[in-house]
Image 1 (spheres, rainbow, N blue to C red):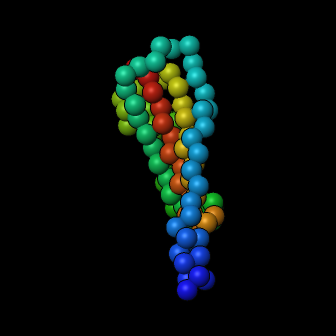
Image 2: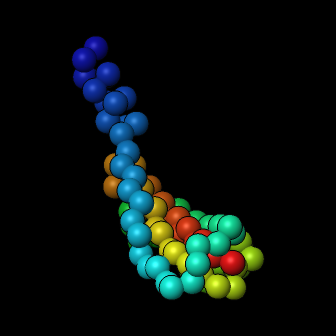
Length: 88
């Protein structure tokens, strides 16, 4: 019973962290854009795009203020990257 509960907890365990990447002298704007990519084992992403350029385009941003990257993984198997851009 204990082993089964431990296995369930282990399978549901994940880790996520948001890191600031860059900031400019542009004023903080009201627009936010995101881009995401999900992959396996940290290397298999199959053409997904989590770039700053895509995030800015998604939010209609032409003057970038800040860039943050949120990284997460589940047991080192499923990796997610999200780029968050703010600006005007």
